[in-house]
Amino acid sequence: MVQCVKLGRLLPGMAAPPSKDELGQRIFENISQEAWSMWLQQATILINHYGLNTADADAVAFLKAQMQEFFFGEGAAMPEGWTPQSTPAKGGGKGGGPRGK
Image 1 (cartoon, one colour):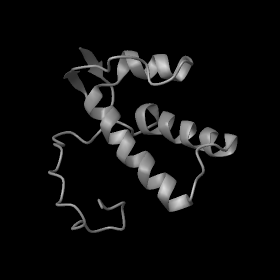
Image 2 (tube, helix red, strand yellow):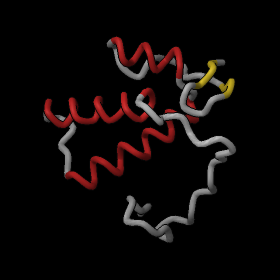
Image 3 (tube, rainbow, N blue to C red):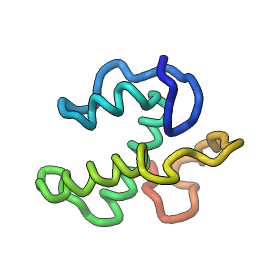
Image 4 (cartoon, helix red, strand yellow):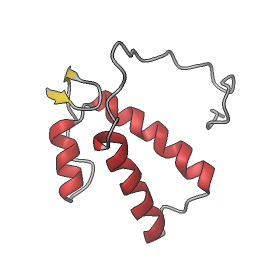
C-alpha cells in the first residue's frame, strides 16, 4: 500500500518500480497502481498525438519529463472529489484519444 500523491489516498502500490532509475523508484514509493494505469493511458495519447518513436532517446526523455510532471508537477494531484469515470465502449469515445480495435 502507498499513500498515492496523485490520487491523495492510501491505495495498492505497484509490484515493482517501472524503471531502474531514480524516477522509477520515486514512482514506486509514491504512486498507486491505479494512478500508474492512468499514466499509461496518458502516455498512449502522447505517443499517438506526437507520433513518438519509443526507441528514440529524445522521445523517451520527453515522455519521462511528461511522466514526472503528471505525477509530481504543480497541480498534479487530482481535484478534490475526483472519481474515475467509466471507460467508454471500444471505439465509442469522444475526444480523439486512442480507440480500441
